[in-house]
Length: 110
Length: 122
Image (cartoon, rainbow over all chains, first blue to last red; front, side, top):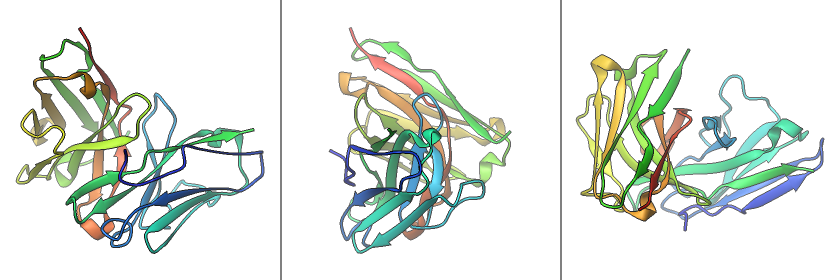
């Protein structure tokens, strides 16, 4: 059971917008920033979003992040076939005094 | 090229031990805190251990405390994870990752390796 809760799957057709949620508590998302990662099995996870909504250089602006209260979300607009991957969220948890992750959401491009 | 490459995984019998390595290249390794994260089959990511840039601070997840030692050799740009008394539920892909910041309100990892698979089975 992951500390941060994500839906196990999400899907959309090419060009659509897909949103992935990440639910936590006051001790993690409610108090600290959220980061998002893209992971294709067998490859290195890739940082997509940090500080809730900041994109590293090289990440397309199709990817956006936001946070409200104890929840965060990642939106992928203009969905492409290459976006088919696992996405997971992460944050620091003050109560656990450590790093916590979501269970991951598998995005399928139909 | 800026990258992290893990090695050392494999098939281990329950009760056995293993030492994983993570080779860093393309950046000043000694400037960054590092962590190990694992992903069991069909499960989410789980933070395992972390170490500060100069090895001053080390921290372990409760699930592995007492069985794991994280270390690093900044002269060789390498990170290590020694795991003892391996159990079936230690079976996972183990990733090393670079922490861009250890400020808890702003924590994230900006570089990951591909991972190395550890399988614990008799």
